[in-house]
Amino acid sequence: MRRAGFTLIELLVVIAMLGVAAAVVALSVSGGEARLLREEAARLGALFRIAQDEARITGRALVWEADTKGYRFRPLEDEAARDWSDEILRERAWPFVVRRIDGGRIVFGREPLLEPATLHIATTEVETRLALDALGNLKPAE
Image 1 (cartoon, one colour):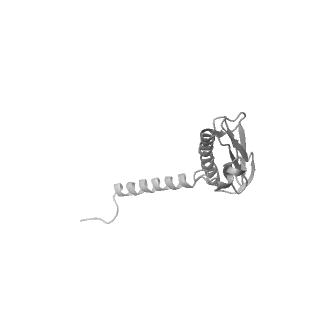
Image 2 (image 1 turned 60 degrees about the vertical axis):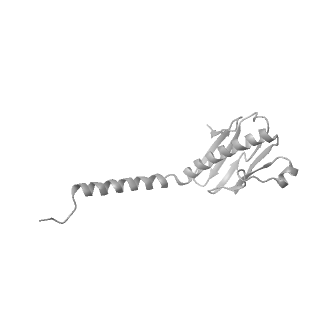
Image 3 (image 1 turned 90 degrees about the vertical axis):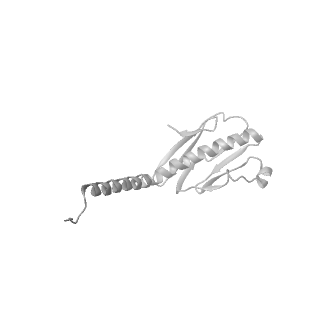
């Protein structure tokens, strides 16, 4: 004679699966704008290192310019900027709303930066300060 219902093992497996699913959702949703800002800071750090390396290799200074809409890299000389295009260092829009940005112009040349550059990015929810060292490494500023 078979009884209708679930065994204890079946119930435990379902509860464990629900717990794992809830953890995945919580980790992917948490942080919203703060998480996007951290990801964008990591992307900027990688792009700054690429720009610094390209400036050293080619001997052509590059400028990073940013405003509340987005940012872009371009050669410092206006003549070279007309014909220049680079897929990696292309113009990008911020993935969040930026209310204010300070330090939105950095020049990368053959020589390392003499003084660390500081960026201040303010969004609708969070603000962050980032420091760019002489080698092109971007880190949270104190």
